[in-house]
View (cartoon, one colour):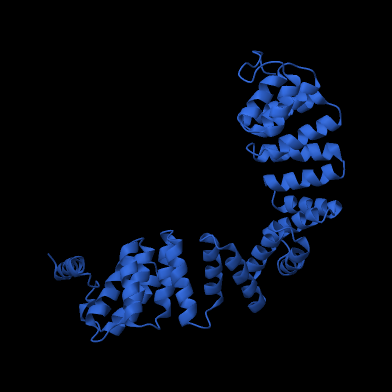
Length: 358
């Protein structure tokens, strides 16, 4: 075997046995091995990087904390989470100022979906580093939400937008939270700020329409959602909001059009069916309303309100089949169905009429 090939095989064997770097790096100093490891890490050569970092740890006369940190980061990128945690904890125990060890440890716990552990480390990072960067604030805010602490998360996001003028994503999240709490006047300034910086920001365009809808400014809501759907077509809840705005304006045909678009985009939605049935009933087209609820119950046969409203509409037509649906709704716990059932159906609760469904 040629000498060069033999040396390469010996290098591979040494690396397999002891985690040593390849290509004659066993004589490298700790610092040079560390720098080579960083280079390999940035190139995505994680196996090679791990070998260099291992070599740096072994060659170091002292405690090479950065090598433990970077080897932990390498294990993280290789999805070897237990090894990553072990190295990152070692780095932190050896040097309580090792900021990156905490950063990578948070990411490791996040990847494992151990959000409570990630939160504990994130809060520790904020205690030991009084001026963390934007990313650390952002991750802590998200972890509060993942750990069912929405008030703390909301407060953290508000703190972020006070500190960082260019932080658009936290502003978008805070705006969405204001809308969820029914506070469109608080959301709109944030939405306008985002759109001034990024006119086609998807979440801001959508939330602008929601804010106007909550303020009952339906013309503005329609314009906002039509603009949103021009750039981001196919979103079911955008069609639903747009249809609702037209319905509140009593523009029935336009409302029906976009309710159908919402159903086509997401057949699992139930609200478009009820709204369509309401419009048809308002137009005194009870048969069309009934057929709309038939379509709903084909998708959701055990929908309590779907069965109740089907029974109610059939009762308006004087059809005995109403009792079948009212009985089903009553059995599902709809109190109004039980009341109507006793008023119009002349049979015991356990003895509904045996008739075909419409």
